[in-house]
Image (tube, one colour):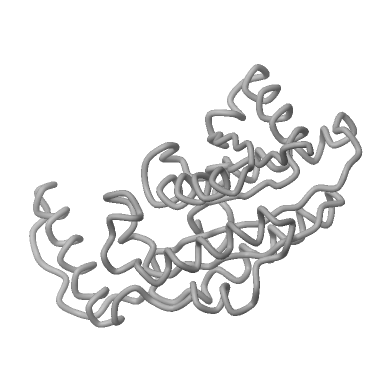
Length: 224
């Protein structure tokens, strides 16, 4: 039996650091545990030059499953990731004809995971244009909490880890991510008031470290 292959594409400008990398690496390990051969590549690094593009195109061509992990930037995908996907679309004629699946995970600094809907619709549109099967989009609110340590060490992510495990199992078995898993991942890690409180405190600490006076006193605008 031929080993199925997967490409986990990290779409954050932070590359191998931050929330996208933490989630992407966690899912990559779960896919490996299910018997898949997994490549993890950074979109920004891969799209810089022809050599990087060749490496990415080859990995994308081998992959039966591509999983994109990225942060929300102005309601959509980061510019470097968009450029990478545009490159893949322009060179689609170089790909080996076969069945391919695409799934996406996006996290946002907003408390509400619904802020990510448009970005995941864009991922679905990309899959359709590439002739790929869209296996589901995972939206994670309060994503700023995930960039400081490995996902499995984040005590508030226990329920999310079980759902990520289920999603990886389904993807490894050539199945779409169940609706109940997608809905479960949209639940916040902590209550909104707690997230806003610590967000304000972090902004104040960063401002102080950069010589800015004053404090954030009012509740910030966290919607669109």
